[in-house]
Length: 495
Image (cartoon, rainbow, N blue to C red; front, top):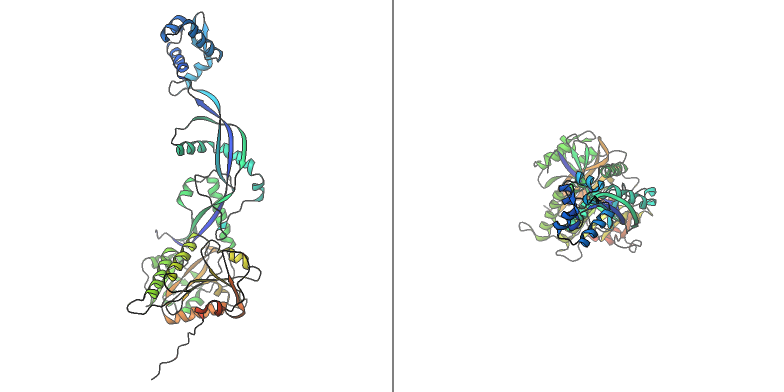
């Protein structure tokens, strides 16, 4: 990974696509039948040939020679004058422009293609697997006016992209490309079932402390300039829509967890995200029991740190007994958090690690939802493999920056906290940074933050991401999540 651009989030966008079955007539160049071509090439070489010489050269009878000459003369390929044969003017011109001294002729050929187009710019897409988009992806829905005129746009797209369509069709069949002048006419066009093409974008911070969006290499290399421009604009819009106002809580976050070793990267309310990320990549020194992290917890390197702690706890480490528990993961208020395949893979990996031994343990994810907005929030977790989704009511009286903190808690063993903070150069994107820790004081603080946000009348129940319907029967937080029902109060040891 280059330290010039360091990722802090990975988001999967769903590009709308639709295949169209197109039947068209194509203007193609074809070789003539072998005997016809041989006759014309002889006349091209000799310019003029007597009827008798022609008959004797090919060994034709009188009737055969006259039949061939009559047929080719009727098509304008040759001229018979005073018992001498020569090329017709049109055929003479064909030889002049031919690259290989073969008299290619133009014909209309019917062909049928099934061509996928994106529904934003109607550019042809290469061979790809389309799928039904889950609510977890961010859908880039096309404008209504484009959808209403999809057949007309597909007609234009087929004509504009025919050279590429022809090339890729020939390559897939292991054939040579036809000599074609393009589309003569389109006989019919039929829309097939639409779908989505997932594109995972890496959001990165660069040396200027600005945010850039890195597109998948294959997509960037193969997509049209128009589609790339439109896609980048849609990504930028998604960043802007996730913007928030109010205090970012940078200094308050450092104070709350006693993260003095991170203060050199936080000047007032501004985070030098690139410098911090670079130092973490190089092995930033931290207090005992604490590991700094940059980016959301589901990024590969951070996820590995979380999984390592889970495995140590559940298998026993350095003579310690096994510690079996569920894991709490509290989502921050960030519209781009958890949206994509990286989050889905992290859910799968964490659940596998937790459920490998010990009955009843699982990954519990918590998110905020206003009343009557539960279905929308739940939809973001569809298709992720998550089973324990618990919703809580936002606390209007709580400190604003608290909702921007991503929390993890494995009771008794480790905790993680990541502040999602905006950058001055890119206020729409929230850049997470923080730590994973085994220090008891950090476990107590994270536990208390979770209880403050989810306990009592703020708890809104367990909601299944995989099926419709309301919450499970009314329960308290501790009834639904008993692994959180413990006390962090430390009593002094007896003398």
